[in-house]
Figure (cartoon, rainbow, N blue to C red):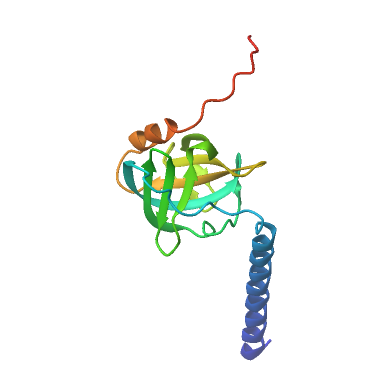
Length: 169
């Protein structure tokens, strides 16, 4: 095989791989087009805590390796997370502000792994929230400056209490 043929084969293979990646990403965008993140902070929301964060991803609930492409949370970004008396505001670079109202919050805890990111044990903050009436998603944040304990505690205060089923054990 000549050098020119080897280069041509390599270029064709690279183009096929890039084409497959583009096709898969567009298919994922179409699949998740029915989901959207709530935008805009309500008037008179009082900020109780702010942190610089790296937004890592949003995934299906309890499936940290299954990315969702919810607009504008499809891509990783730096920004700020603000806990308000009404919910969580994510002010990410280059994107409109996402506001997850307290009524949409399901749980807040620590995580170690999600798509594209593995960190020290408990190094990510996982925020589970309702994207719509029957879809719970997990958004992962990495606090940029220090321990996320206070941030997590402030968010957990906003999570509505689970309804009492009346059952006892």
